[in-house]
Image 1: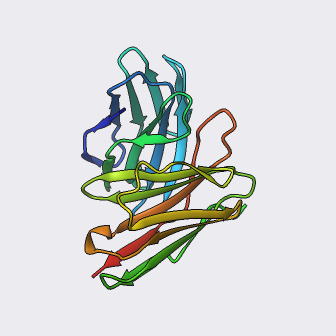
Image 2: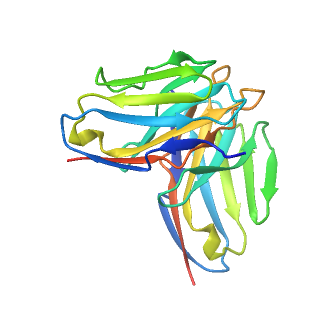
Image 3: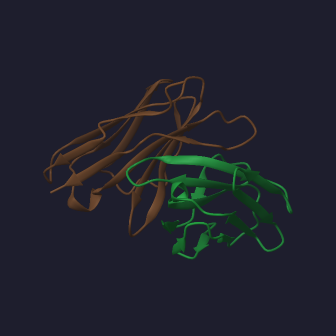
Length: 111
Length: 114
């Protein structure tokens, strides 16, 4: 079965700094989904990547998909306290609706 | 749209008791998912439905867990009897199944079994 490994598991950065979170799959990625979770709340969809080399941005968050490396990265520019939370990557098995999720990366932003 | 609605938000019960978690998916979505999240195991898919029919229940831990979806706007996850190791946050999510697999999550039910 497909497994996703996220790195780092936790990250503490100073407000205003850039950061990157990685998600590596044990199998070929057909669709990669990034979600954000705040403590005590559900997951909020950020963006989806489907094609190798695809890159999407939303506000100060950019996600890229390197299909050959079976990896995706999430980059936050000029981090803000509102970026704090747990970021999870999810992947779908082609033809199946269900997603497999990574363990998550806990992001803390220090003022 | 109200989003995915779950109830209760918090549940504290004693070991051996029956627990029922409820979910109302987004109107028009024909896929519904039940997940469990713990520190040790992360986010795990328990079961999912398509058009009210269970498609994959391979993630259901054991026979103490059961899920139903009697109609397109309601689903339940039942644990009977509950055990302390069932303590977790249970999420319900729904999706339209149109092309992408973007899922919309509810706020979750935090279950504590003492």
